[in-house]
Image 1 (cartoon, one colour):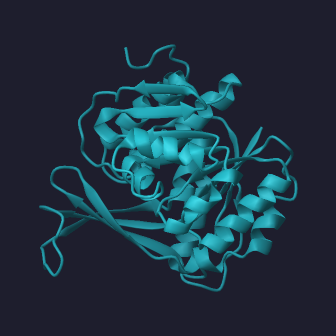
Image 2 (cartoon, one colour):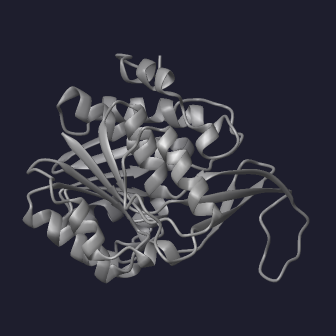
Image 3 (cartoon, helix red, strand yellow):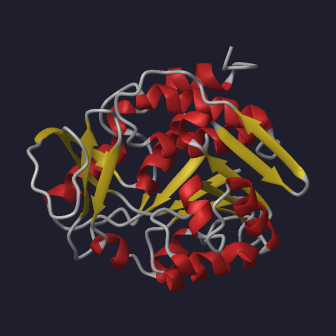
Length: 305
């Protein structure tokens, strides 16, 4: 089983601030780290560290940041396609990390926009029925849909993490086998339902096969057909929430793949334990659990205890 992560890669610059700014505000801040980032890269790295055969399909630019990103990916022993730079600037995220551990992100997309459908389908040439295609919300609706249609035609299992969220994504549910959303994204993509349970039922009624909704400190919920599971969050100290959602998704998927079962409550508990490790550290790549830590998490029969 092979996971193809189609997304983005970039540089994360994190600034420490007292509190998230209001519109029009000028606030003091201090740069505290520079790290590899991009939701696609984050999820692919964690999947690879979990021992899952993974390919990252993401564009880097022909600048110093691109050289740095490709070197970081090479250190993870993670195949990257295209392996060469494209004629663009490498994407970057500016992360505002407040004193209470919350964050806001500003992300560029010039490299992600330069990744063409031809690039992507070439990388998927050897994909086999039953392999997984994982995609985030970095591309336009049109490109995102074309990728999922290609995967659907190739009988790949499709996983969608629509972040950053775009309203037209709600038209894609019949092409998606599993969606992973936070509670805000679920409400935005379910015609404005205010309650999470109502939003979930609306998404399933619109053609989605299975759904995981992450709830931060309140844990996560899994919906599949008539079945509904809720798992509590793993306790932990919040230092920096950056990358926690990516950790959760990748470990959840890895748990189910390693055990040869659909995503279940145990996969959510494994994911919650790994996410608690991430939020207890600063940064992005530097905050992710190591291969050894992930091995311990994924072999625990009940990691919350």
